[in-house]
Length: 145
Image 1: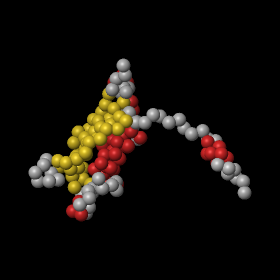
Image 2: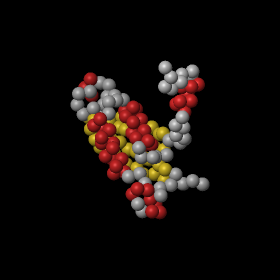
Image 3: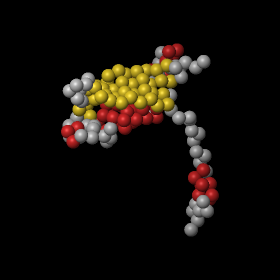
Image 4: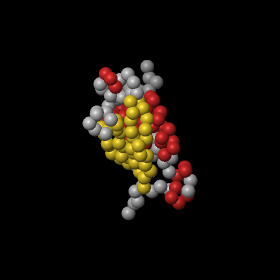
């Protein structure tokens, strides 16, 4: 039975411009990010090497950069960007991402969204001649005039 190991970050605090209300679009507001990123088995358990795990220090730096550079309005889209980063850039097999705006309203401690994503099946790299074959199949011949 395969094991399921994960790294996590709880309550990463940062500020970013995000939202749909006019008041939210002109100044940064606080965000809290919780995440869990998993792999089938963390090899670092045996090797004791940081290169054999998802380095949460690097994840933290990358998420801080995302908070500075993103151009989305909704927390849902922001959470999706976090999940994509963890899967595509850090090799997570699955992720759980929670993004919250603390004290958005006077009568609640936080509002937000939580999503879970899995990495898709590994895709084999396209054969170098696939584009040429596709053009030939469409009736176009590369380099022909």
